[in-house]
Amino acid sequence: MKVHHTPVLLEESLDYLITDKAGVYFEGTLGFGGHTEEILKRLNENAVLVSTDVDRTAFDHCKKLFDVESRIRLYNFNYSLIDVIAKIESIKFFDGVFVDLGVSSFQIDNASAGFSYSADAPLDMRMDKNLKLTAYDVINHFDEDKIAKIIYEYGEERNSRKIARQIVSARRIKKIESTGELKKLILEITSDRYQVKTLSRVFQALRIHVNNELEFLTQFLNNSLKVLMNGGRLVLISYHSLEDRIVKEFFKYEQLSCVCPKEVPVCICEKEPRLKIITKKPILPSEVEVGINRRARSAKLRVAEKI
Image (tube, rainbow, N blue to C red; front, side):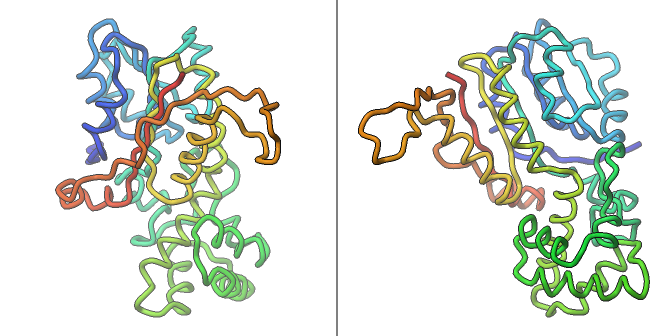
């Protein structure tokens, strides 16, 4: 299988991540190995890289790609299980942890996965085929209020109620079975000016809900600090405001030394900071990178160090 995938913010992310060329590192979403290959190039023969991905196609691709690479350990697990994977590998601490939260170009362009509105495909959207819930289930079985809530909260789409009403009305006549059918319904009630943005938001919302993306991100952030060594870097690339907000707020909270209410004169919470924020503002891709790789345009890189 020939896969083309251009890693985003490659040099920037690895410059922050690798502090010890002989270290032990974790890569949370290996995708099709773009960042993975470059990480290995920067590490010496004594280093270890543990990489994981729930997408079976991506995992199988990388298993073949890195078949003779002795420094890498591959897992077909969700990245939120970083602490479990560390235990399996008898790793007490990682020197650095990296996660690229984006959906790969291959996954978006692969019609059978149903992530994109650009091709007609079954309404699936599961990255992990072991998950039971599909986009078909959401569209055809959830009530109108719940569909509207998903589209509004995960897609930040203002016309969520109108879209949900359209979906529920259409499914009374016939089940909505494909991305093409869903796209047609959305376009019927969306002005030409906002069609692309609205489709992107609705499809993003369904994908996030089906894959529990924000819940897994929160779990990962908490679990990562259990197995990240002091001085180790936590490096994340996000692609939409919901992800970035979670990462930003987590970093800010873990940097605080006190969370007592303002009216309390003396600190009684006994909270200790666990992170030092390295990137005060997120690192963004250059105009040159965006020109080469259009899908990099929304990427934000944030870095924090365990203390």
